[in-house]
Length: 110
Image 1 (cartoon, rainbow, N blue to C red):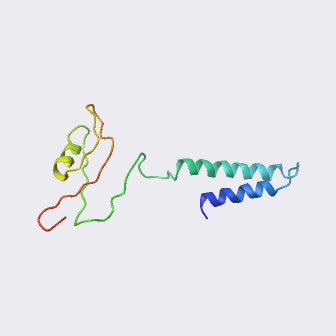
Image 2 (image 1 turned 30 degrees about the horizontal axis):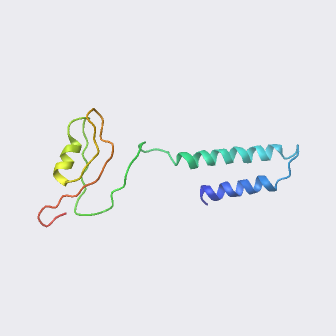
Image 3 (image 1 turned 180 degrees about the horizontal axis):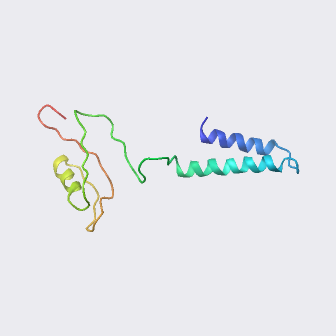
């Protein structure tokens, strides 16, 4: 059951529950669950892993390579020159704004 379905079920339960002093606790717990699910829906599932924007590289070709290094050493420039892709950059440090995967064609390999 997904988050949206659970939210819908909890809202239905709140609407069908008669409101009186005996049901205040039950409705309060439902509202707390509803608030928690809505915050999860807005934030996404952030348990573990890196934060920030990312991208997924589909399986393609014979190998995958990642460039890891210190800031402002030319990783994006190297990737642009070797693969022919364009990464958006600015003229100050820490400026690769988008990551674009590229492919290299060498002899029979891709």
